[in-house]
Amino acid sequence: MIRKLLALLLAAVLLGIAVSACAGKGGGTETGAQTQGEEESNLYPDELPSLNFNGADIRIVHPEANVEEIFVETPGGELVDEAVYRTQMVVEDRLGVTYRVMTLPGQRNVYSNEIVNTFLGQQDLYDIVGNMIIYSCLAAAEGVYADMRAMKYLDFTKPYWNNEMAEGFTVDGHLYFASGDAEVSYLKYISCMLCNTLVAADYKIDPAAIQQSVLNGTWTAEEMKSMALSAYNVADPSALNREIDTVGLIVPERDHACLMLASLGVRMLDKDGTCTFGTAHAIDAAQWLVSLFNDNVQCAGTFTPSTEESKAQDQGMFRSRRALFVTAKIDDIAEAYQEMVGDLIVLPLPKWSEEYEYSTYSRGVYLSSSIMRSCPDTDLASAVLECMASVGSAVITPAYYEEAMKIKYSDATPESKEIFDIIHGSVAYDWGYYAQYTFAPSGSAQLYVYTNILNNDAGWAMAVNARKTAWERGITAYLDKLANVEIAE
Image (cartoon, rainbow, N blue to C red; front, side, top):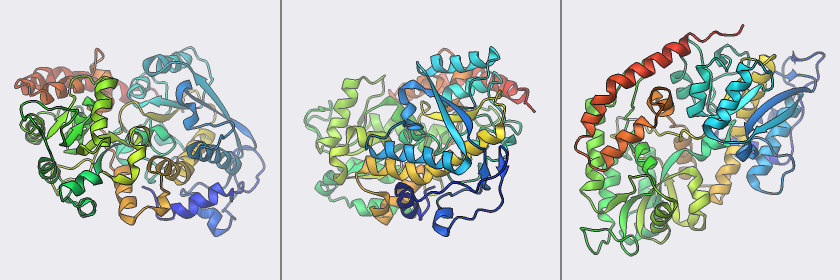
């Protein structure tokens, strides 16, 4: 979670107040305790020792389409680009390394398959890999990645790593991919909810009270629902007109509704591969969501595969002061709602009840980080990755917040900062969501079921039950394979 000293840290970084670690003799030398001043020492929210790898290359491979998330050759003035560049400079300077960033064309399985084929072809080309987490799950079972739990300098208890996911994706003591502030996309794809403060004012709803509810732990599904049902103006209750009607909640993408179920505490599979989608709580939460959208014209969404046109239309309702709440990912604030930033507040998706924790997913297309099994120097790679996540949390994360929200993290209200920290720290793991292609290779098992639920298909529970055994068998076979991956010494 972002620390209270981020303002100081970001200011220090952007002013260039960063010095290299004490010089040592020989590659990867630990040079003793840090001797930087207090402010400089605070720049690094980790416990890495002073290291000097004497200019060694660190080979990083990334999808060509979004390489700027970890490497910027020449910053052009954009805030996040400058922060990425500064992070790179700090990591290189602090550890005595040189970035060698390579890109591969293609996305999704095309890119991931190239990584796997490179390893299987015994080509030693990369040290650190950024790969979509849904495909990292597949690549890990092929023995491509090294065990990150065995790395000298990685510390997954630190807040710049997602601790819950690191624990959840550890199988038989081994971890092959991790999520955190080393990758901008992890932050971009975290789901959330936005509240239009102008619509709130129209219906005598106090945005500050909603924020306080979040902070008090009382921002629940029923509280959100009661507000959404009170804020609407629908001419014909039998048919929503997206051009003129006002609604309490709009869901522009089918995936967002899936993420709402996650926020209600529903998981598809637990860590040992048991299907938990049919538990009493999961059924209650699913039925609540079915009722929310099918019994109330005030709450609407797109639950078949959304098109760019339908998504833009739904987002347009929120922009044009005709929706109180909208589901979103953090990046939507910058991409779809930036002109109205002063008229919205960012909230976590509501939880099931006060006894539950806030939780959500970062969509499975974000990039997780791994170290190749063929990497010849895992001390080097693990130190660099730890430093990327650590410095990234202090530099890139608040810069991205400022770019999206048009206000510096340090200048935001205490309530807004704390809520952002809650959202940032609430990303949960679920093998059923992130590893679904390992046991349902023909398509997304989760979206199939969720679509049935959200379209009010009375047979959704039967659909779950019919597939339960196959899912459990598939994920158990995958987990067994993962547990038996040969670990490089």
